[in-house]
Amino acid sequence: MKLLLDTHAFIWINENSPQLSEKVKSLFCAEENEIYLSIASAWEIQIKTQLGKLDLQIPIRELIDNNIKENRIHLLQINLSHIEHLEKLPLYHKDPFDRIIIAQAIVENLTVISLDNAFANYAISTIW
Image (tube, rainbow, N blue to C red):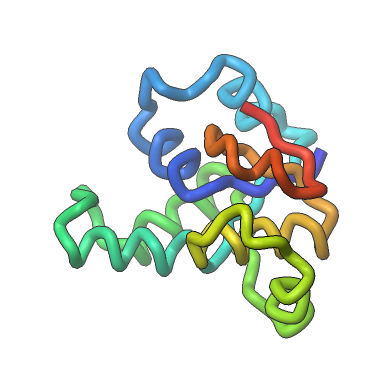
């Protein structure tokens, strides 16, 4: 299965948060699954850190690099086809980071791991 982590899912996985569902923990640990993190999530994390809304214990680059090495996470770049697909998305969700994650999921045929109920309004598969 090809899975795209929403930003909060990535943060909670790294914090081993009790808010993570058992299903998400299981999918994350299953070696046959491909786990992706959008570069938009790294951008969102950096902004939230600078605004004081998120406290990272290590710099963002180190956090991402550690996850690539230790957790087999693939960093998904934003490309023009993702941006073009934004035009086709209804405005159910106005958060620009979530909208690009949704577009990436559609274009790349990925299942999104997210607790955000607004994702269900789009033609994507979600898991929580």
